[in-house]
Image (cartoon, rainbow, N blue to C red; front, side, top):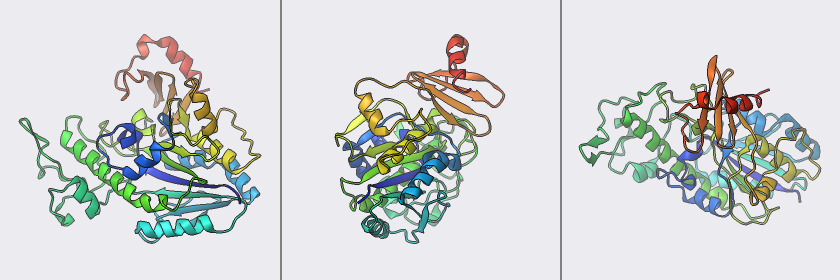
Length: 371
């Protein structure tokens, strides 16, 4: 029987919001257990902030064509909100019951196919407008009336503040679309947005739990974010902010690969979405040869990382001509007819202190990565 690879594609989730990356906001025991026994790529960078661009990198035509030619079954499970990648068979799961999804996933896994399967499970619950169920309200907003009709669509004035003297006051959930702009001193709105997305992540964890129960150790399993949202780290929120800031392109990537040593590992070397496509090809096809020499099979990257942290430039495309480049400790932002900006990571993880004028040689060196 051919290899089976299952990918949980989490839309719109930044790594900094997740518990296994150190966030105190999120409760996600299912994903934490998976991370604890797998390879966690701590510095995985999304290739773009436009979701269609991301999908083209994760599932490039070269890979999809090779899999189809091999007879590999390509299945895309989703709630029908978005269209699947070309070449995949789209299965629209009409139910919101996670047990129903787990049953269908189990059927796909057991369906006879000696040439392998790539099953993508697209999860959109992390994208606004967020909808919370009773379990999410009970966990994150237990002090509220469960009648959701009592919550306003983003009208902030009627809600309590977050501090009264030294006393912390809990904020209400954000139930509407994200605003395009939030003032940097509006801590209440930032808190409401971050806490509401944390509640959604808790719901996602409950949602995927039954699906993890139908997987076995012989199946390649990946949890992957496509790209993150601006949800309070900067004043421009949502997907309209054109810059690929680290806070939105640093996404989760966890990989269980039965080809490897099956030992848990945290990988410090930077990885990227092109590496994911390379990994799918090497995992599902014995003779896959990518035309992109700059990408790594994640299994090989994990092995190399045990000796030293791999240094290479990682590019992320924003909107228009905005581009982000990460290399070693440095992050450079270029485009939008602006002077290039340079930031030192990890000292300036949120990229707020531009030091380009102090390191013109670094700027020049990194600019050569674009061409």
